[in-house]
Image 1 (tube, rainbow, N blue to C red):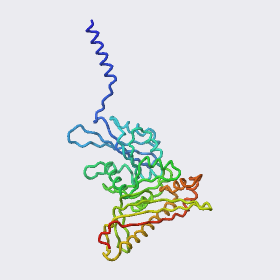
Image 2: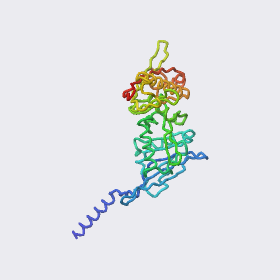
Image 3: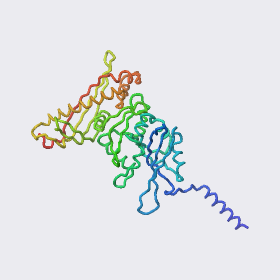
Image 4: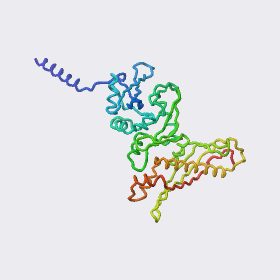
Length: 363
């Protein structure tokens, strides 16, 4: 009788333990959501395409990818909608990329989608956002070299361009600039022809909607106005079909705000640039001295920076955050009013200091 009682106790204990043990989820039962593409259809509905990875339980076999498409015109329950399309568990903790078509960004705006995304507690901290010139979902159908997946190829492409040409961006940066009163958001723009994907520029936003953009070369100038850089390259023309190429460009902008006695606000930016001279196109060894090349390079960059600032003011966007700099220096200013009424017409002085570190064959 005692033996039966002991066995019953053991059985009940095992039953309780088994009921408390969490269900083990096998890798092959999980679809890891890697990236999402958001497009606006002709009828105004939003189509979201997710690219997922499934771990295959076989030695030396690559993970398989599968696309999930949902129509979600009101963007409510985005992740629940993705889960409803597959019997496997959709894991969103590895999602690193969201791509929006240019049409979506212009007409729909990004905030509703981003608001749904940021409410997911498992999202990647360095989540990347991009604008696609064409339908964003078409990027997932392309075949990329070296057996890389679409999201891997695109993320690597952005990472490399952020080293030399683009300012760093993320979803958190976008939302910070969206909420701030003294600056505007921006995102990289990509395009694809066949299986080739390339970065073509930078899109500037008013609120959460795409407003205008600049090309990739202009993006490198914007970046030097916006943040300190340690890498980069540039071509400086010296007449028809002649010029020089710089590599390893370092730059540092310093913005200044002064309030005059008549309450006028003056703004200036000093930019120090230094780099290595790597190549001369149709330029003789003795044709220019180092100081002459530095002066011509200074003039080139100064003109490019002035054109960039004028472009931003004419389009009434402030991605550099000049309004925020003014707010920090002028006590009690209404930054929203200043940005709307004064920023587009305020004169901004640009002063460039340029230094060649490695002269090569140039004397």
